[in-house]
Image 1 (cartoon, helix red, strand yellow):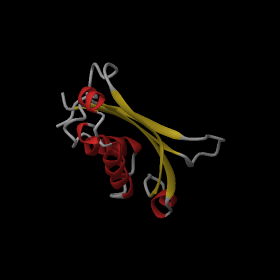
Image 2 (image 1 turned 135 degrees about the horizontal axis):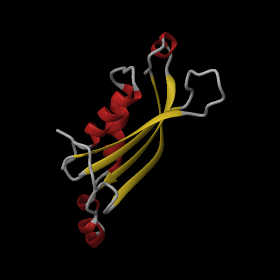
Image 3 (image 1 turned 60 degrees about the vertical axis):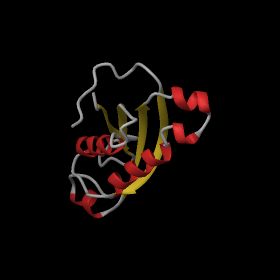
Length: 129
């Protein structure tokens, strides 16, 4: 079970920015029929000490696995709300027990509003602690 983290800003982290995924999520009928672009930012709080000393990938958290986990969720089950999608991504990333906290920012790049809005998004922080 994941929880909200009260001290998530401290420590080492891996930062992944502007991961682009095309998927089908939303409340409106056109959002449920037509794929649209999403952008994700992931911050993974990890202990990089062993990897920093050894300079060996086997001692590091493989960020490509976190990317794969996030993409699988976003391309997977269609969800109505960004909140639901963001929490599902967080839980998938936290499946790697070396990641103790994750922040997920997910943005819908073409939100269905009549104004000139670049994106609409949600930010969640989840922790195994």
